[in-house]
Image (cartoon, rainbow, N blue to C red; front, side, top):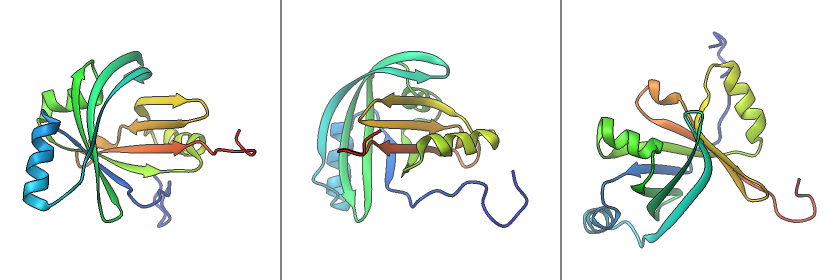
Length: 158
């Protein structure tokens, strides 16, 4: 890491807090009753073609999304497959899993982070749609950082 006062890599503000749970429906009920969070949008997704710990993978997740001010709350339940979320549950149980940062220069940031020995452990590029990478930043503080890039739509789309 650099010794200068200027950070090696600048990230935008946190836009999402990801929480891994055993049961999304139960967590939604609890968080809504306790904190008034919601309404939550719940869906199931099949993810294919991602890379987890240098191996291609497939999984099914049940997810719930709500807002708390400017922050999106994401609840994640693994229905099947090996993911960072299932690994987290095995080793730590339920809890805060990741902070997400929406970035414009996804490839440039990954390159900068690589020079700082911070690499993706879970990532996927969905051409023309989005890209995401969970970084190995969990070694400090136990929280993973996620970079998320939403592809530009329209004439100037790359």
